[in-house]
View (tube, rainbow, N blue to C red):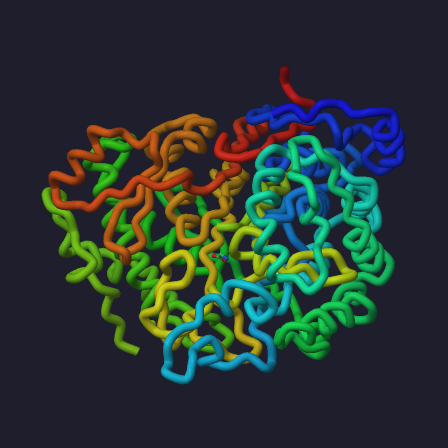
Length: 567
Ligand code: GLY
């Protein structure tokens, strides 16, 4: 996709972008593969990847670049990039330290367990998914400042490219134009004042999107730090927006929000050290369970997407997701038996009823027994100092609640739907839960986001992650298995077809390109196989010697940028 160069006025804007002088926001394309020597960034939008790489070129480290890329995504990729949502960062630093930062949204203080049930106890999912009441207290800005302690450049330098892109505008891609057009009615219905995403005429590829209110919010963050969002003018605008349409986020909720540094989930897989996100994301635990359930079964010999390898991977996905529904929730609120769930003995027990000749069933394969419980976006960054960063961040659904904070110019998440609104009632991704993931004031909703780093001999080897709701851990799982077991290139591991099983519904979802013969063989074994749209948009960085190979998924506008690219 090429955005055509526009007229003189646009060229003027180009020069206004002092902080990112090499970036032309009106003429760019999605570069899918790059091999850098001094660093690489891969994200869901070419302009955001360019912002990230410009920060590395200015001497910033991978954390600097990850912060700047996230801020740019909040402007150029409003469907999932955000300051009104939340996310997770996993990093391996050059000093050998692994870190995990949790900036997941929280339920507001006025939230309650049954807030999305009517008087008869029936779920009202529209309220957990659309509009003001669907929003959790945003965490992204607190997360940026929590990670900033590992950065090296002035924060003003990291945020300025995003301010410039919001203030002066950029040319939108085809998929952005399409989604603005498709969502026109929803944006109109779910906002008290029309947001900039709505205009009279149809949006076209290359149209300019200018976001002045968002630029002013970003300036308040630049000038006042975390308080530029969680206090003062921005916080007042959020509360005023809430009061217009039954929203419940209060000024105190915003003032009290804190990102948390957590102990990353670290485990060994055949000599590789895998560093991933702990609770409140389910992603890391699920990934560990799945990897450990296949570890002793020589999946490499079964080869990529044969009926044998797909069946084995499906059956471990089924078991991990059954456990997710039963046992997982915010560890600050509920007790989760993480050690047990990830122990070799427990996982061996989970596979006892695995039969390589027969389809498993979710009616008979439930959660294990323990005595004591789509629209998101990922970016991967590597610098030349030995730092690597994986960030997955989200508004939850595409464009979140579709509600923009009037005067502040950013979209609010609809993350409350990631709670279990009622045991047995699936959320928008079909995920089930119980009391462990029930709504409570100040609690973080369970996530599936799985930003992951693989180390070989304690040196960064892979940086992986993807959006996709419940398909996130299974996509990360498949990407790792593709590379570590099937010996695939990073490019193929990202772009080859993916599949997904999440216990319930009891079906294997496959992309259109999934092998038809294998599909028939699985059906003959008794599996229900459903074709669906794309699964995830995986962004991988692979470090091989001096080469830093970055791959953007073909499934979207995703783009890779390299510092000192090898032609
Ligand atoms: N909102 C998607 C997730 O956190 O899993």
